[in-house]
Amino acid sequence: LTLTRFLQLNLQKSQLAQASFGAELKHYKTFVALIQEPYINKKGSMPPRVAGTNVYKANKAARAAIMTSKDIRAWIMNEFTTPDVSTILWFTGDATAPKVILCSWYADYKQPMLDPTVVNLVKYAELHHWPLILGVDSNAHSTLWGGSENNPRGDALDGFITQHHLSVANKGTDVTFDTGYRSSVIDITITNHHLPLTVARWRVDDRNSLSD
Image 1: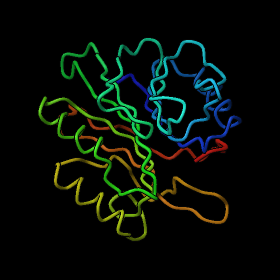
Image 2 (image 1 turned 90 degrees about the horizontal axis):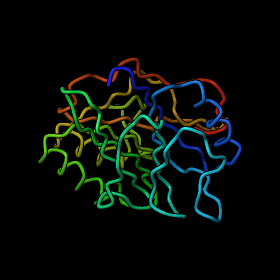
Image 3 (image 1 turned 180 degrees about the horizontal axis):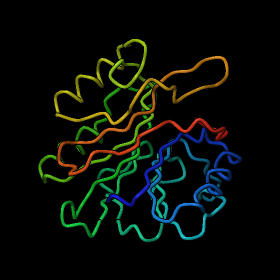
Image 4 (image 1 turned 90 degrees about the vertical axis):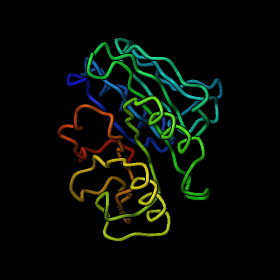
């Protein structure tokens, strides 16, 4: 667990951003990437293919995906995978947390804040006492994860986090979404209390990724 690098980003369905991100991944040995709005071609794949990786997503319409290095042993949890939610069960080989649920979630601002699939996943993880790491493009604002104010979507997610004893790993107030004319903190890393370690060195990468 301690040697695994986690990355999270929204690729804005950009092929160029995806290619740039794929090139960046070549520098990492063991990693998990929680991706929202990947670029998907007509064949349903995410080009360019990055050698030595596995990709988990629902279908051609997926707006959430997970990419891992080949040494991450996992399988997709189909019951908790939809076009907007991608979920895998990671067999870590670590005695302190032999199974960890990893989830990427795109929360469409046109839809209710709380996706039923995610709600059921959080309950499932709690029932089995399994750690959960969830990366979400929330399209929601809250001071809990570094925003300057709350909006109704943020209040709803705040309440859900509190109700289920979840934790937000975000540190500071660095923006996670910046178009040049507007910016906000909407990308969140959430964990449950079964994770034996805290998320270390969480930060916003301020390099130009051609995405958010």
